[in-house]
Length: 446
Ligand code: BES
Ligand code: MN
Image (cartoon, rainbow, N blue to C red; front, top):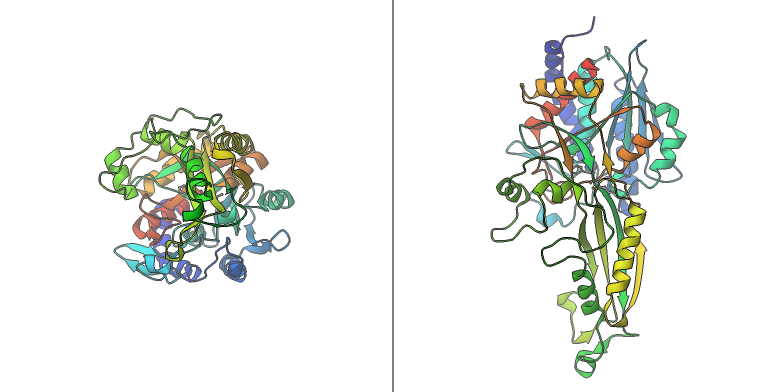
């Protein structure tokens, strides 16, 4: 007999402490896929994740293309006539950045005021833990087939993901795919994400001199590379803060109110600092391009001397609205830069991490009805919202192409103050428990 929702709720409550402990053990592994010195840690976290699902009776494998970060592929077959659900999350994390910016060490999970702090405590080890919780709550009575796919290179652009999906296409085939890597709308407001921006990044380097020059002897006549670069970067936005590159797609946004006061609070935007760009708040976040200087190579002020810099380099990240294409958009940005570079400086543009395509999901069909029921029940009757996000999850589009008939449910453990990728990333524990309950009920209703 299939347990009823009330029984499942009780089962989940009983297993949550063990899942929480498993989550903390994962957070202790610094699985930073962007940094080669952490390659061994990424492999260790893959093994740790594999062990967790093996203990739930799953058939488990580590899969990787060459020496890329391994993914975990685990499965329990569907009872006759039942659908198969694929549960996705990623076990790699972003770099921690400067430890001094954290209130507790990034790889020591620490609870303060209802949040569990640590790099990856939310993004996305809590997504793995939510899948684990749902499976553990059902015990040996899983009502559907479950395949678990936990990627190891999401935060570094999923370079070999396409090949992995091809190679394991038949193992990954599912009726419903749950991608637990996004955010809820607010604490107390559950959401599925139905549109994601795309992303690509690149390096831009300018050279003006054969070698550094004395700024007194040469300043005023020889252009220094840092000034060239800053003028070039300034040309990327208009005075109101809209991206000034021609040829990028701007879509209309749904009529969702994200009030500026809440947005300013959620984002920690300082008093007196303007929001940039035109259009509604969600239009600017979800359906318009954004362009950010994410890194800069220049002389440090502590080491500065009176010198003209011969070269300077920036790394730029571009977010793309649904409907846009990373290759076309990169061409548009290149053209813009080539046209804008001042004073004949030499310009070199080169691609960064692998790009991710934007996605738009049509949230209709039985899987979305099951999700509506499960999430609303987990949040005590609150309606499930369908929202967009400015973030990117490259695998969503890959799944959509590989399995055009599968329903894509993009769920998430984050809330607007999770600070994923930033110092003091923290998981809202009470909301996470609701995510775990929602996923437990989702498997039941599916
Ligand atoms: N979990 C995020 C994506 C996300 C963030 C979705 C916030 C919704 C709300 C994911 O791990 C991520 O950060 N992705 C990268 C992708 C990139 C490395 C290709 C991103 O968006 O920067
Ligand atoms: Mn993530």
